[in-house]
Every structure is written in structure tokens, then in C-alpha cells.
Length: 236
Ligand SMILES: Nc1ncnc2c1ncn2[C@@H]1O[C@H](COP(=O)(O)OP(=O)(O)O)[C@@H](O)[C@H]1O
Ligand SMILES: [Mg+2]
Image 1 (cartoon, rainbow, N blue to C red):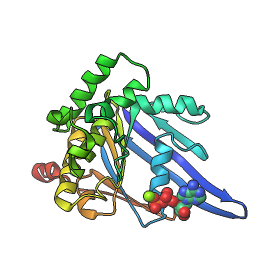
Image 2 (tube, rainbow, N blue to C red):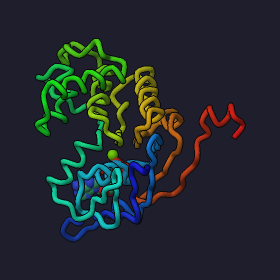
Image 3 (spheres, rainbow, N blue to C red):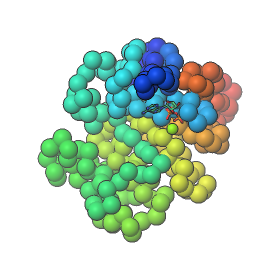
Image 4 (cartoon, helix red, strand yellow):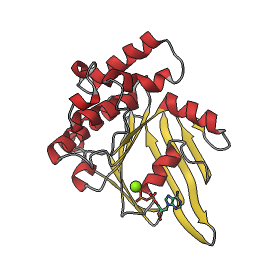
């Protein structure tokens, strides 16, 4: 199934007399289990693209479909519910709640939907295990490292089996070894069937992706297939 489909999406920010075309007729399809990296200069529309894809932005035209559901014309509440069910976000600055324990942070998106709290905890524990930090569940955030915090954010992004993870420069605050570890986790999620869209400045990190999409002035300028090591081994 297609996890994300943008078709001819345009987003114009109008501010009195000036207009900025942040996205200019962008089309992009991401399949389940596909890892797509978005690269481009500052101001090229990368964060806008993620906001549109995640239903955080409503001022666009065109068509956006997440997990088979078209987003056009939906209310803010509808979009929020859809997002909690299908979409996880990972940001450079983690966006975790400092006063909550690790497991509480991960369970939070589920609890916002007033699900059974013990089920939410069970799902949170499973998500933490998936990103390799099950043993940190009971820690406070000030008791774990930056790289571990980013893994908590990834666990929160996938909790409850969400099918699309959107990551905006998630390694920006991390050293390169820890950054590589985060990329390896993203790759594992994709290999597990999650669709991953990663915004990054670093070509080295884009190398983990199946495909790189370049944006410039709000337009997709080129999409290059990155040869995965599996393709190379199979001679495909
Ligand atoms: N809320 C906003 N209001 C007005 N202009 C914005 C807003 N958000 C982004 N922009 C403009 O849209 C363009 C794309 O921004 P953005 O998506 O943040 O780019 P990137 O993430 O690639 O740096 C930039 O010119 C930026 O200044
Ligand atoms: Mg940005």
C-alpha cells in the first residue's frame, strides 16, 4: 500500500504584500517500507513538505493521501486524530516532555486518544524494545543521553504501529557516531514495513535511504535511486 501520496501540492505563504511559494506543484509517493531522504538548501520547502504530509498544515492545494485517506477538506480535529493513528514525527530537538518518564513519553500519543492505559504502556514498552532501549523505560529524561532521547522520540513516533514516520533533521543535535546509529534505526523501521521520510543535510545519512528527493525553491528537481547494498549484492 502507498503510505503517503502528494499529488501536485502547492503551498503559498502570503504575508500582506509578499508571497512565498514554499511548495510548487510537488508530487511524491512513498510506499510502505520505503525510506526516502529529502535534501535541499535552507528555505527550499523541506519542513513545509513534512508539515503538509503530516496534516499539520492546511493551507495547501492539490492532493495529499496518508494511509489511503485523503487529507483535503478535513477539520483540524480529524487531521489530529488521523495523525495520531498513522503518523509519527521526529524533530531535531526531540520534543519530549521533560517531566515525564521515558515510557510515559512514548505512551502519550496513545493516551491522548483515551485508550486503556495498560494497553498504552504495553505498546510503549514494545516500541522501546523495537528501537533497542527497552531497559530505559523507567528512566527520567535527564538520566539518558541525547542519542537515547532521540531513540525515545523514534519509539514515540512508531507507538501503536503507525505506518509513516516523518523526521526533520533528527540527527542535527547529535555527534556523527550517534547520528549513524539513529539512521540505522530508521533503516530498520523501513525494513520492518514503516514508510520513513527523512529531511537531512548530510549526504552520508541520505545514503541509508532507498531514494533521495532534491528540493529547490519548492520544486522537486531530481529523484535518484540510491543503490542499496542488497541491489548491489544481487547484481540488480
Ligand atoms: N509560517 C511561515 N510563514 C511564512 N513563510 C514561511 C513559513 N514557513 C516557511 N516559510 C517560508 O517558506 C519557505 C520554505 O520554508 P521551509 O519549508 O521551512 O524550508 P526548509 O525546511 O527547506 O528550510 C521559506 O522561504 C520560508 O521562509
Ligand atoms: Mg526546515
